Image 1 (cartoon, rainbow, N blue to C red):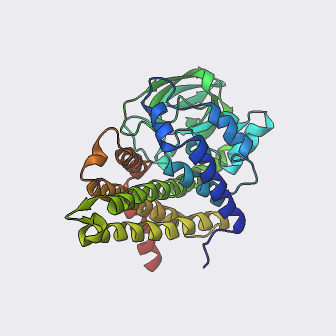
Image 2: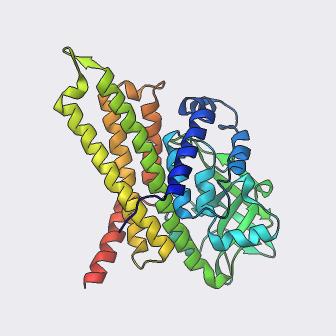
Image 3: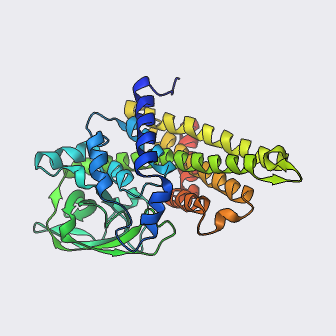
Amino acid sequence: MDFTLSEEQELLRKSAAEFLAKRAPVERSILFIDDDGAGWDPAIWREITALGWLDDELDLLDQAVLVEECGAVLLPAPLFSTFVAMLAGVESPLRQRGMAREGGLTLAWAEKGRGFGLTDALSSGATVVSDATITGGKTLVTDAAKVSGFVVVAHDHDGPQLVYVDASDVRVRPQSTLDRSRPLADIELAGASPLRLIPSADVVDAVASMEHRAYALAAAESLGVGRSALDLGLTQARERSQFGKPIGAYQAVSHRLVDAYAELELARSLTYWAVHSLQTGNNNRATACAAAKVAATAAAVHACEAAIQITGGLGMTWDHIAHRLYKRAMSLQSYMAGERRLYQDIADAVLSRSA
């Protein structure tokens, strides 16, 4: 099966890379991330909107192309969070009521003391919808301070619900986390006004689809993170010398870079397979998305570790980009589901089919 990008998608990739290199290079993003202010430049969101990155015409593969390029520069804007939250069935009622996504969205599902997987939120939780209000709280909410609205997994007497809550009705408490380029927060919902997004009967399927999308998009972003780390390692291998030779001439260095490249390319194939499976409704889509996330996030982590080692440990210093990439790779690896759970899901699916 041919998973190569179309001419239009290659053009999208190129234009996104050029825009980000000019408007949001990683060095500039780091200045915002380390600043005590908002942690990002909100003006770039208007530019992203004007470029059409949030248009309805873009499909999941287009979004994957964009988040890969954003991951490569650690863009701190909430584009990834918005793409995860904007499942097709969820977007329609928001648009009908004039609630455009130009302000950014994020998905809030996890609660303290419970499993952190998205489908874990389908069991009864403490965030409750009743009498046209929603009360409760969520944890590990990505980009909570950067968005204009939240898509929340809640519950009522009919079971799990997906509702929209405006940011003005939410109290955000930022948390100290590993990756400051994509901060996490706890949120409180005290008598907020929710907008029900889809019928109760469709929530379980919608949440499962969101989880699969999240895995695929996390895999795509990991490819961008890993690619940037590999580029750093290659630059060091060419420019740094030992015993009168570039260190890339030594097998201990060159082999590790080759292994990182091969791992990333394998992960790319799995990521495109996952996206294709979601877009075609393939029966293997859950397995494909789990495989893509576990492979791509691991590849990104290994590429970052290789880059840090090749810099002679310099990559772990605060001023170096490599450790920033490493933190994003680690946060993506744990996002929504870690390796152990994903491998278990893949094994269960494969073994059940062979039984």
